[in-house]
Length: 438
Ligand SMILES: NC(=O)c1ccc[n+]([C@@H]2O[C@H](COP(=O)([O-])OP(=O)(O)OC[C@H]3O[C@@H](n4cnc5c(N)ncnc54)[C@H](O)[C@@H]3O)[C@@H](O)[C@H]2O)c1
Ligand SMILES: N[C@@H](CCO)C(=O)O
Ligand code: NA
Image (tube, rainbow, N blue to C red):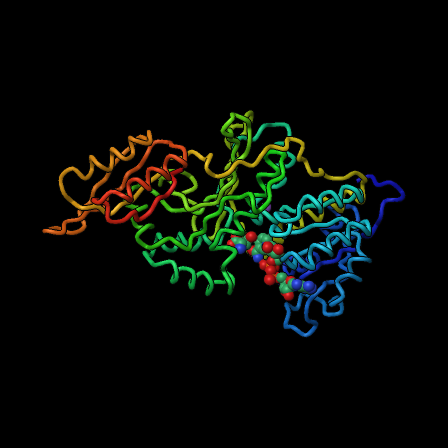
């Protein structure tokens, strides 16, 4: 490449946090140094790695002479800061400090971006530096850049997918083994997918943060973590998974961000994370283990699908290094990457505006007239039935049955009212589950 005489020949790189991802980023910076320099046009010199403890055991690829517990001082002497410690503070202050010093930032921190993204994007923009975050959504899968750049000339209608590897592993394991949730989570922990405290994954916070980031990019609108309607997988049982299979579905934790209309017809966006019944023949049903997959539906492009590893040290490091080369190239060749695009400023609608097909599973008395009464309760709310399946549970005087009703697309508010009405019928013993169907 032809470089201007004042282009830097060396860029100082600071890595903050040396855990699962940080270690793999350091490994590639060390082992691929020559190749990265050739691609960038400048040497990427690792000048320090901020850690909590200097004495902790580490992979030998990490040069102990580069370790420091003074992250602030390290940030002050870097051209590019790679934030991989996670959490809100001190990550937030260090990212702000970095851009104030004129350093570009690469981060994998979805929690921070979903909470404080706008302030960070503005600070980077004001300072004229880059803030890149491909690794924050779906790990190695290129999805931030396609939505932010490749689709910048199109109109995205909907983004949906599996964006949390841990919960996909847990649900996949429940599907294949018939295990309950606790056993599957313990297995995911033993294999290193789920953390010791798996709350962020199993309660859907991690997926919700990613959904907020994707929605912001896709709809040119600010969407924060609190705007996302969220349900995790903790309430799911082995029976829910079994019934999904019996009715031709696979249970997946889906993130959905879509354009929708408010009550007065105004345009808005809806963003939610919830366990969803995916038809067995749908491509998302075949996303196994800890893999992620994201569908994007855009006006001109039509349907796009992105699939790959959404977690793990090396895959996530791939996305971080891609960003690092991009922002480093801007330093060498001049120019800057995209800034926050929130001009559409669409309202985030409350989840009551969602429309979906639903599957309602009931335990009912098994006697004449029961089905008619349940069907009547749905008809009262104009919720149309697509199919009904009845399976006997117990026979004799106390005969009972499982009733699985699949509805046509209905507004979630009508569905909720319907379920309350059904639950109140004396012939209905229990509403076991209500799940959306993709
Ligand atoms: N692990 C993955 O698969 C994955 C995938 C995508 C994104 N991410 C994101 O990447 C980031 C890092 O994740 P991870 O899995 O490597 O976590 P990790 O817990 O393995 O590593 C984080 C490291 O940062 C260190 N750290 C925390 N606070 C620090 C501080 N104040 N000063 C110095 N060091 C500090 C911790 O001691 C730890 O070693 C997080 O934002 C995470 O959400 C992780
Ligand atoms: N805990 C996350 C890591 C990637 O963000 C997951 O399981 O997908
Ligand atoms: Na990604």
